[in-house]
Length: 377
Ligand SMILES: C[S@@+](CC[C@H](N)C(=O)[O-])C[C@H]1O[C@@H](n2cnc3c(N)ncnc32)[C@H](O)[C@@H]1O
Image 1 (cartoon, rainbow, N blue to C red):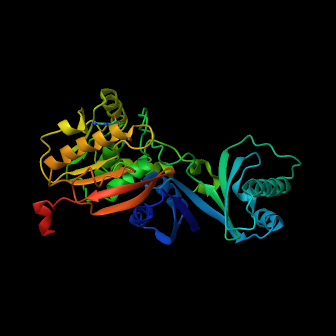
Image 2: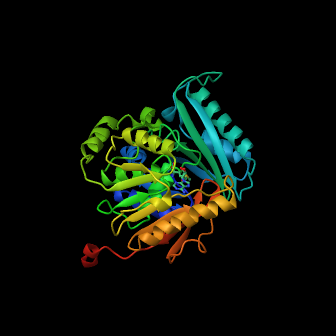
Image 3: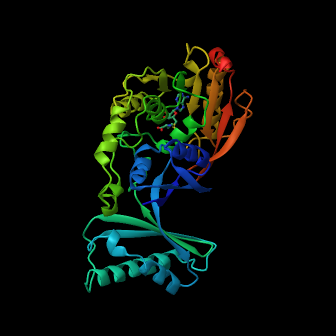
């Protein structure tokens, strides 16, 4: 059976997610802010969870209909054959959102949706009350331009929770966003990569996972693994194949540095969760980094935001600029909300708006020259 599947992502990285979905051999249906819809079989729902590095969650679009009143909403949800999907004690929760719709009260939409599901299940299982003691299912009822869509969350907790980040610093970047930054850059596994503000090591670890073909979800489980309609899927076979395709010995030259020794220890521990002991993490103030070679790529998430004084921030970026001036052949990518143009003395080729959670940030691109061997490509 073919499903319509929705993967959500950070605003601004839809094009990267779309490419990842296409690379899995799946057909795109549509793209909107923070969402990419595509078609796939039950096994593709699992593959999307296991492999998509920039997806935040993967949902199945269960039902779609027009709902101008709560009665419309109730009837539309009630009409679905719920006993085919849920056990008689399924423990489900309903999240909601509403935009440009007559049914704007999200809590009422959630309540009506839940009532309709419970009424239908009680009818189907011939029961008079409902006990949520079984397996967990989470849904999202979405009202958009009076169109109701009920989504089933197949991921469970957000896919940025890869399972390798045992510890983290005060301002870690989401793994999904770190991967998007890498995929938006000119870096490829044959080039050097440095994150000089590495914190818990997220950017180097995500890059090494790409280089060695380690699936983003290899250390975790997904809610869809207990869904009855996914029984036909051989999860173990797909995981085994993904393991077999990991190229752990692929040489890499990926580095991460930070002036906080404790963060470097944390980054090393996190990398060890994936046996990525060949990422070189070292303690260093950014302006003191040297011997970097040529034609590498910096991808980084320097400090920014309200927790630091302007003076401290200015100094940090000046120090970063001192490093940048020593490596004219390197390409530099950074995500920040700090206004860098007066401090970083390199031409900015692009500044893409990206949302880091609710903070509007810019992803700056400063391209270095192409490495000589790539001139012939
Ligand atoms: C926003 S955090 C990076 C978070 C990281 N991307 C992660 O996922 O954990 C910025 C990091 O820069 C480090 N840092 C701040 N100023 C520095 C400097 N002058 N030199 C080197 N590291 C610095 C901090 O210790 C902090 O870990």
